[in-house]
Amino acid sequence: MSLPESLRKTSHGVIPDWPKILGDLAESTRDERLARFYRAGTVSADTPLEQVPLLALDVETTGLDSQRDSIVSLGLVPFNLQRIRCGAAKYWVVKPVCELSSQSVTFHHITHSDIRDAPPLANVFDELLAAMAGKVVVVHYRRIERGFLDQAMRQLVGEGLHFPLIDTMQLEARLHLGKHRPGWLDRLLGKKPVSIRLADSRLRYGLPHYSAHHALTDAVATAELLQAQVLTHYQPETPLRDLWY
Image (cartoon, rainbow, N blue to C red):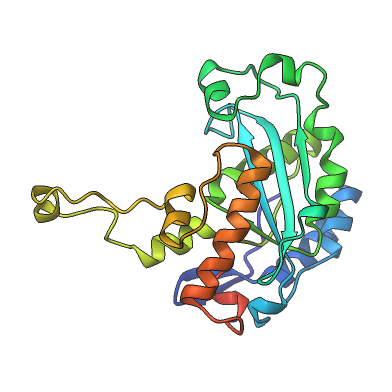
């Protein structure tokens, strides 16, 4: 199923009209689980950020190509601009449909013994969709979370998965556009490009260092980063349309 053409032009490009998209998908999907998820809808684009129900999400994978690689763990935590609800956080290790590589094990430290008795992703999708329903998902680099979850759902039911999100990496890219690619003079002077990776972005806001590549830790780290970004560069009254994709 392709994404409906319910799009809105903003100063940051073409932004989907998510309430309409989810409503259309609820009517057209053939899968009851997806229908329930889409019927939960989402808040309007005019909603102030301080009123938006947010869900930080991170997935760890066997590689970076959603067509060849697969998910090995997922972490999520609901939050808003004032509070991160760690008591409601969830974390799963799942059995990937492809083999673990030595490189992926080095990154996320999930080994063959960890996944030996792990459930397939299909077994946790109901709980995952229930946690995501009605929320605006927050990720750091949307190509991973959106791409892998979409591909996994296509393999499971033959349809993709669509949901509104805020990408904290993209917010950093807006702020540092042009700075993370220094010109010849900067290179001559030894200036390094500005990194918009999660850990480096957090350092700019004085946030503590966390060990990377654990799905739940990275989800919490992403939630904290968005809170800091809004506090520093936006206002609690900023409309959601300025940030979501």
